[in-house]
Image (cartoon, rainbow, N blue to C red; front, top):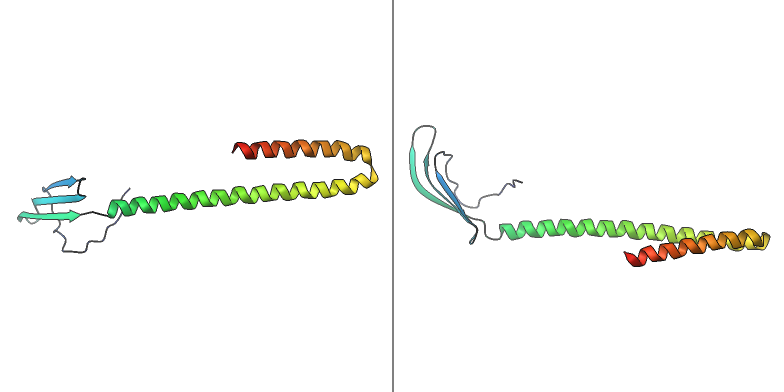
Length: 126
């Protein structure tokens, strides 16, 4: 992945045939010599320092990861709330049913309790 970096000092001229080395211990790159398209030969030395840049990029990536985790967590919480709302609504419905037909209420209540237990078990495992 390429990232555009804005230079703060004078840039070396465009060139080819130069030597270039990167020193990861101190985060610097050295460019020496080369030449341009007009035949001019360079014997100059340029040092680019990237200190702090790698750390900044890592921080940006970590921030992105934390944002993604937060979004996923919010989605899970919203789904949890929806499921709990549905269970509450079913319980209210069952209470109303209880007044009419006891047999249907008992069968549906057993199923609802099974669903609640499964939901609680999944939640405790994650």
